[in-house]
Each structure stands twice: as structure tokens, then as C-alpha cells.
Image (cartoon, rainbow, N blue to C red):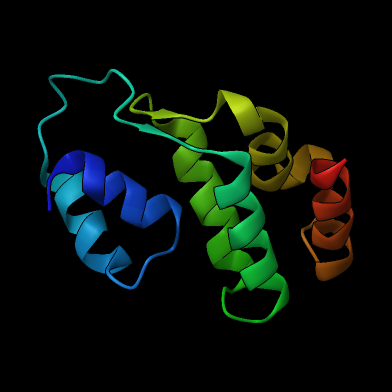
Length: 108
């Protein structure tokens, strides 16, 4: 798995997410240009899986924090959603009702 594949695996909460994290952490930061583009569809899938109990709320917040801090993940298409998930100090604690509302807003 290369860095771009690892970023895709991480951002989609794939089955090999833990392996992907190891690759991301160990890869050289020489080229920080976007290697993965996070789409609205991918975020909606992650949020839906969170609502179904497949993804823990704490993991979701950590996921958003990592995405927001990385320059090799282009999250501009879903920047507001990632900001809302990663900034509980400003946006309030994440819970299922907020995720449901976010999903509604993203589907408009």
C-alpha cells in the first residue's frame, strides 16, 4: 500500500485503517501536496456508519482532527463538516443528533 492508498484507507475507515496509519506515519513528508481528495460521498458514508454504531464518536472526532491537520488530504469540498467535527470547543460535543443534522445539511 502506498501513501495515497493509505490516505484513502484511513479517510474511508477501511478494513486496513490501522495498517494505513502506520504507512502514513512512517512515510516521508517530502511531498505534502494533496495525495487524496476527500469527497462528500466518503464523508456521508463515514457519518452514516457512525450513526449505525460501526464507528465510535471519539474515533470520528480524531479522524476529523487528523484530516484537518494534513496537507496531503484535500478536504476543501467538505471543509465545513470536517471543521464542525474536529472543533468541539466551538461547535459543541459531538453526539448522534448532531451527526444526523450534519448528514441532513450535507445532503441538501
